[in-house]
Amino acid sequence: MDFSELASIINLNSYTKNKSGVDKNGLIFRGWLEALGYKCTVFPRTEIGDHLLFNASFQKGKKRVLLLGHLDTVFPPNTFTAFSEDDEWVYGPGVCDMKGGNIVALEALRAVSAEHGAISNIDMLLVSDEESGSDDSKKLTAELAKDYDLCLVFEAAGVDHEVVIGRKGVGTFTISLLGKAAHAGNHYINGYNANLAAAHMIIKLTELTDLIKGTTVNAGKFSGGIGANTISPTAEIIVEIRYTQSQEKERLLLSIKAIVNQTFVEGVTATMTGGIQRDVMQPSDKQAQLLKQLESILGYPLKTEKRGGVSDANIVSSAGVATLDGFGPFGDGDHTVHERAKKTSFLRRIDEVTRILRAFNMR
Image (cartoon, rainbow, N blue to C red):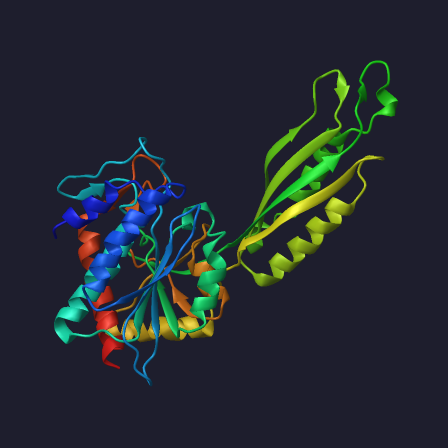
């Protein structure tokens, strides 16, 4: 396989906040997909890259398939930007997360187009802000997803080419505590210690963790106070939750609200902002039926796995669409300067996705 096209987009920096670079990456994909007959709808943005929806022709009576990827990567300009390769691996920012996955989808679509001409009912959505949490695109993705029967997402494959059937939901919250400053030596009892209240709160928040159910609560960042000789007037806790079950989400939301409203130190009050970033991707009957259908097309079983990390598969799955993730190539080191993807994995995934899309294009 020739990796020159992958190299061209890896060498183009598309850090989420680099709008110019992300849009250039999108423009390249637009040229590639429009050459296959796709029509592009641009969802323009001012601070981040534009989101792009590529529509094939539409035929009634056929299932509608959504291919989902993202254009952005995590490394700012002049940090980790260059593509390289050896006999076994390709290296660079996005080779597996997920410019490489987008190339898999592109090559499969090219193969189907070469065999059958026009492609129908197989669309592709490329968003620009997945790596920063999809805060802008998630509403758009959820709304568009309603038009589709199934979705394949092109994040990296598992080490044995597993596809992803479950991802934890994630939420992030900022808790702000307000107390009262006082001189720690002369007027200790006159102060309301926000740091002390935050300490009690962190313990209570952490106790919500239930590892058996796959639920974690992490008070990952704390700040507060002025100095050692001052009772702390303010504090802030940033908390992340992850969960594998919708019931756990409800438990966590109610429990965190109760903790924030609890008085741990007289005179200290707390407020909270934030919420669920991406809801849980849970295995479902519709997903199981889709997996069985794909295995029938391929003629062999697909290994599956669940992951603690999130992707835009969470969003589409939460919208009720049968969704499978991990159709990109296998790679590792993503989000580090050691990111790489295995060359033979591209070949396997392109072959598998081609056969899958060929089957849906013909039905």
